[in-house]
Structures are given as structure tokens and as C-alpha cells.
Image 1 (tube, helix red, strand yellow):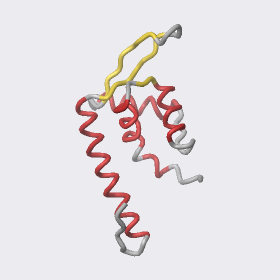
Image 2 (spheres, one colour):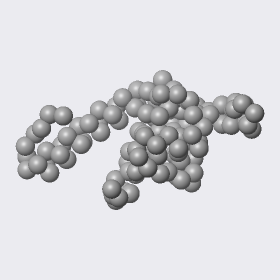
Image 3 (cartoon, rainbow, N blue to C red):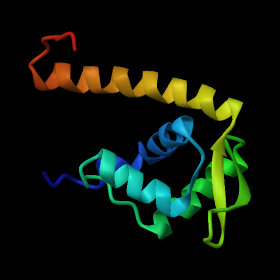
Image 4 (cartoon, rainbow, N blue to C red):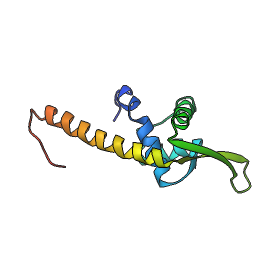
Length: 114
């Protein structure tokens, strides 16, 4: 189902942190994994991802390092930091509360447990 891309704007950082909480990844791997996990609903472009990663790095939520990937060229991998894990936990809690509240309004003020 297609949806308004502005809905993704505020949650992209959280999604990237979630991916990195599972394992260190390089940029294209994040793009592909996010697309796969979301059934191609979320398809980030490199021009969106890399500024986001630089911002997360500047804020101390991720770090990066270079590593050889098999016979392939050297790749830049990103890793979530301890502060990044804390921020992810906060963002997940915020997201849960936000979606529950939106759903409550959409259902006419009736709260449903999920």
C-alpha cells in the first residue's frame, strides 16, 4: 500500500538504529534490509541515508569503521553506540505511545490493547 512519505520522515532514524541494534551494517546493506523487512514499503535512497547516518554519528548514536568484506572492496560499517541503544529505547517507547494515541483517535476515543 502506498502512503504519504512524510509519515516516514520522523521515524527513519529510529528504523536505522533498530537495524544497527541487530548487527553492524554498511549503507547499501541497511537500504536493502529495510526494504526487505518492510516488504519494500521503505525504500531509502543513499542521498537520504548518508546524511542521516552522519547526523547520528555527530550525535554519538552510531560510530563507523572500515572493514574488508570478503573479496570485495573495503566498506564503511556503522555500529550503534551505548547512547544509541538508549535513544532507540526512548524512540520505541515514544513510537508505541504515539501509535496507540493515533489509533485511539481513529477509533473514536476507544482504546484497544495490542
